[in-house]
Image (tube, rainbow, N blue to C red; front, side, top):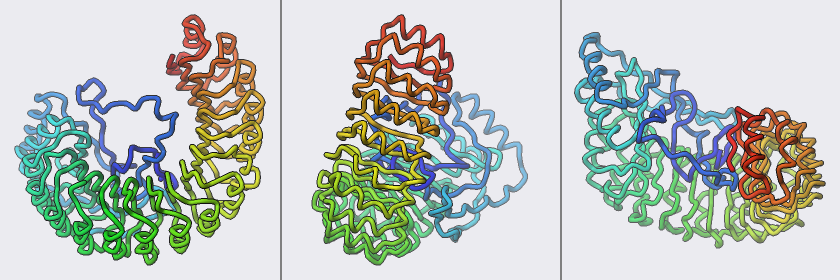
Length: 516
């Protein structure tokens, strides 16, 4: 899953269901005070456990995308335009449930929703103004007259806001956030007959409110992250949504007793249970008949062990498996190896996995992403693996050394390599010089020096390089780094570089954002 991901997916913050690809939300202009916050350099530390299921996003037709107004004059102009167009509006094109990646396409059925209705221009203007007031984002189609999606993620939203949005029946995708959303707000949602994708995050809804969700018959994707008032019985409503394909339940209090409800969702393709620490191997047994599952994500479930892997190994269509902070061992890798269709495997901080177990992954020749962050390994076992399609590898916080670097150099299609706080030295960089497709390299906290960076000058596709905390990198490296003319981002904080050296780098690499 670009952070959690399926083929072609993008890393993301945990469990947030966002719209990807054509028809994506337009960001608020950068000058606007409501512009979304940029991520810090944590991207190098790998929040890949927070990848979204973007591959399951509803595919939208190519459409006009309109930025949210940044001043009231724009709203007034839009209102005048709308009032001045008396032609009846044609029905909006129905979205197809699709996939951003070819390998994991969602069945192409179209939700049986009523045709889009004309919305009073004054009401639309009021809704747009309210979303702007909250700092959210929208997507408009049909020359700006059809509101299809609203994103209020991270914006404190209230029941009154939900009631207003529910008056616009053209909305198909809705992201709501905040503890001021209660059961009263959720009861407004059935007024949105075309709703396909819904996020209710950090809300105060209870079991009673959750049952209303069963009335959203066209819903395909549901995110209930941190809905901590819900108990196991709350998920009974899912049985009324047999066409649900994506269910995100991060950081909730569900136990094994909730899992039989999920086990009835025969069309489910993506399930995210990260942070649901009360779910054990026994709960995973309920998934054994979900043969359409393509992605399963688990985190902080130390009680998910090798026994659970034996259960998951029967899900032969699985492509994306996340087992962060799990209780599995090398024995569990024998079971995972049966999932030969896997394209992404995340074993972050699953401390029972050792170097001796890595060769067991040899059957997984379709892997494109492999995350071994935080394991007690030197990664030398990678030399036993043949991974011709691997494009992303995370060895951060492991004991990976120069022998591991030599093994990694065999993965010729690698584009992203994270070696944060490993034992890679200049000798290891000589091996990495063979990775001609490499575009992102994280060497934070490694013992590399100026001399070693000379090995990287041939990496013409390198765009992002992190060298923070590399004390052996000094102003003498400026000459080598200046040869990386394709760089767009370079991080050199807490190195031996001086202000003068950084100034020379900025002069040599004018198109590169240099963090110092």
